[in-house]
Length: 467
Image 1: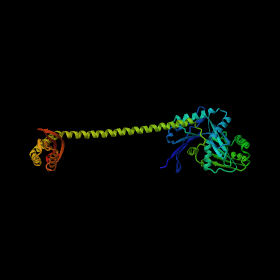
Image 2: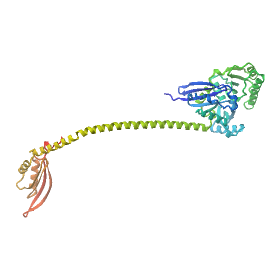
Image 3: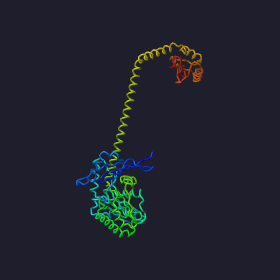
Image 4: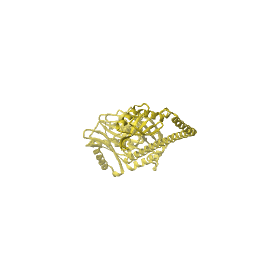
C-alpha cells in the first residue's frame, strides 16, 4: 500500500467558489474530487461584505482533505521581482525582508511576507518577494475558523496561474513575452525573459473592452511597466504577447496590444488548462522551502497542536476501549473460573465425609494387617539373633518394633566377638540392615567388658507398603 498525502485548493471570484482535492503518492498525483458553488449576485458590492463568502462552504467543507490552500488575488498583494547575490536560504530570508521593508508603505509588523525563487545560478537568485496585509490574512483565517475550516496555506493567485501555464501550456522560452491573464475578478500580467519571470503585476479590473478609454488605459499601463523594466533588465524591442482569458475578448483589445508586440499576439482560453483550484492544490502537494507561503507561522503551530491533540484523543480513546475490553474479558474469565470452582467444591463436599470414613477404615485395616502378619515377628527375629550369637556375647536388652527394627544392647569380653556378631547379623537374610549405635567399656564384677548397642532394621511387609 502506497503512502498518500492530500491537498485541497480553494479559489473564489465574485461569481463562484471552486475547490479541488488531490491525492499524491509514489504512483503519481490524481484528482479525487472537485466542486463549485455560486455566490449570491452582488455579494461583494456591499461595503460591509466579508472578504470571502465562507457561508457557501457550510455543507461542503467535509469534503476537504489534507492541507487546505486558499488563493489571494494579486490586487491584495505587494509583489516585486528581485535579483539577489546569494543562493543561501538563510541569507535570502534576511535580504527579502530588508527589501520589502524598504518598498512597503506599511510597517513590517502589519505585513506577512514571503518569497519564491524563480531562477538561480551559482551565486545569484531571482526571487518574487510578496507581502500581504496582516489584517487581511487574519480576517480570512477567522472567517474560515467559524466554519471549522483551518487554512494551512495562503498562495498568490498569479503564481498559481504561472505554475499552470508552465505545466499545461506552451509558454515561449525565448525572448521577452507578455502574459495577460483575464478572469472575471483578476486582470494581471506576467513579463517573462527567456522563460524566467521578471515582473508580476495586477492591473486595474476592467470589463468593458470596447471602450476606447479603457483600451488606452490598459496599453498605457503595460507600456509603463515595460519601460520601467528596461532600467533593470534591459531593453527588448521584440516582445510577444500571449493572452489567456475567461471569456472571448472583443477585437479592440488584441488589436491595441499588437502595437506592443512586434512578434505577434496569441489568444487562449483559460478553460483549456486546469482550474486555478487544481493549480493551488498541485502547488501545495509539491511545496518546498522556496515556494511562497503567506500563512503566519502561528497558524501552522495551531494546526500542529490541533493535530497532536486530535491524535492524542484518538489514542486515549483506543487505549480506554482496550482497557475496558481487557477488564471485561478478565471479569468474564474470573466469573467462569469462580463458577467452576464453586461447582467442583460442591461436588467435593458430597464425597468429603465418605472419603474420610474410607480413609479411617483403610488405616485401621493396615494397622490390623500389620500386627496380624507373622512375617518377621519377634520370635523369628530372636531366633535368628540367637542362632548367630557367639557364646562369649551376652544380650542384655531386646526391644522389638513391629515392621521397623530390633534394638539390642549387650556386652562381650572384647571387641572382636562383638564385631563377629555384627558381621553374622549383617549376613543373615532376615534383616534389612544394621546400624551400630555405640560401643563403650564396662566393668562387671571387677572385669572389663566391651558394651555395644545396635539397631537391626527389619524389611517392610506387603501390608506396610502404601499404594
